[in-house]
Picture 1 (cartoon, one colour):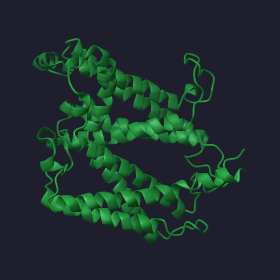
Picture 2: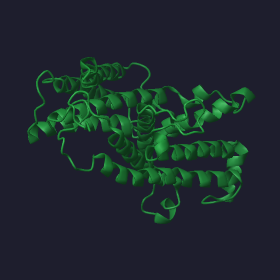
Picture 3: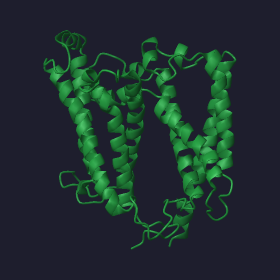
Picture 4: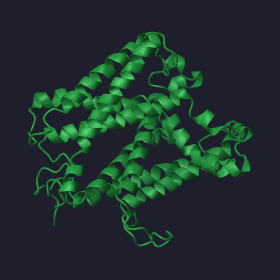
Length: 361
């Protein structure tokens, strides 16, 4: 066993937890700045007016919300520092009370920053990026992409998303340590036969991947129907407005990339997700770097999770006739399915751990 690799593999929990502490302290400082009248408060009253209705903090004010942000930032920094204690010794199981006291707020912080604070504008910005990139040589669309897609409130959402991912990593590391598992790979028992085994993950991961493939396909069919002036699940007046504003073909482009993303999701359960297929120049036949599909799928899952939360908030769930035919209503399912498919790929392709030795054949 390579001792250098072992040391490196065990180092990420400490780094990500200190990163969460630093992020929380810095963002808490921003909250204090806004509380004392500083410019740039990005939520509610400081957000784009048309976007407030879909935002989790759409009614926020600097006077009322900024002090809460400052307090949560300080509390988060203290919690993260507390989570770093005990790393130098062997892994020990935490009691039930300690587990709840340490892990619940850590996971809550990750959920708040990844799912609730951002909204669908991040997904829109990412989704339209390829369209602007393809149209750039032709001067289409006639708009400044960065000015439209990334005003300060959206940039702030990306900052919060980054903090949420740090908190998710810190919470995961603490969860493993509290369960007495390996901090590097998460394994605790060489004889484990539960749902995280490769064989089990291959079964339930297949269902998740095909669900994550079907949802964007449904969305793509609807948006292409609108581009072709077919009033599928939409009024003819609405179709005319989409074509007059140019949104019809922009939406079709977004739908196309969504469908491509859905097809790529199948790589999480198909052989070409581990070995480059023969139609990929130069790389054909070589192993796919495991971190590539995991990182891409995890990032898209995080973006979809926030968009799905918006869909839950704005959908009228009392009217089944409306939401059953709305592609947006299925975004939460898409996010959950892609997240599960990503997790299944992680378990199915997880190599033997260089730190604890579990998983070796």
